[in-house]
Length: 299
View 1 (cartoon, rainbow, N blue to C red):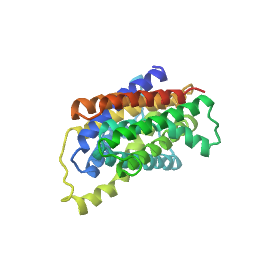
View 2: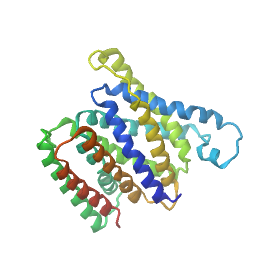
View 3: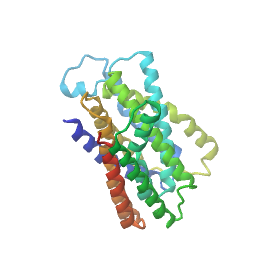
View 4: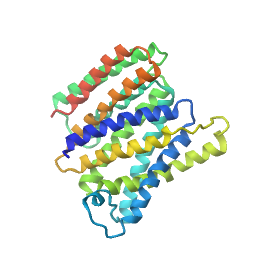
């Protein structure tokens, strides 16, 4: 399948992932939700890691085969878990306290941060059309802040908006790192996802342990089947995403905005499931935001 189609399909699963995550963390303790989520992913990949030692042939098996890697590469994938895991923590706490129709669009702005990071630290020079895209996204954010004020959310001072912005920034760093792992380090998508999932369990363990020892009574956890569903939806979305990036012809500047069209699914769910306010004005803002994201992809 072409990397463009893989990116769009990944966006569909990512949209439903955002819905499942909102259902999981709403009025629920975040640390156990995160831990059982990553544990589910690890338990799915662990048998495949062991089975990959067997000489099994077949196109389907080759797709999910986990290659043997060096300790240095293990370190690179552990770093991937730290970056992405930190992003998930900030995003999950923000999503618990923000309307999904506000949180999801902020998350969808990650291409903006990817461009800024590349400009500041990688000496890239965006084209004039890309700067136009940056301007459109910033104006969209200002418009979202107006919608947020009507719901008591002030973008410049709200703690959870700040958490989501940090999560989005870390997500952009993670996307650039994915390109390095899959195109320059030439790792298989299955290898990246498998070991990344294993190391995420170790990364989330301290937060989960702290909750068990100190916060369990203050922040009770309620089991919901949406928790493991998060893992399954993200595994599918990420596998499609990693496979798209692994294509040497793929451009991260296009994959990133394509994947963020998932905001449409999350926004519709917020309106239908939670009766969120000001949806017409927010829909206009999302249209402007997505326009800016697509303009960023032109160079």
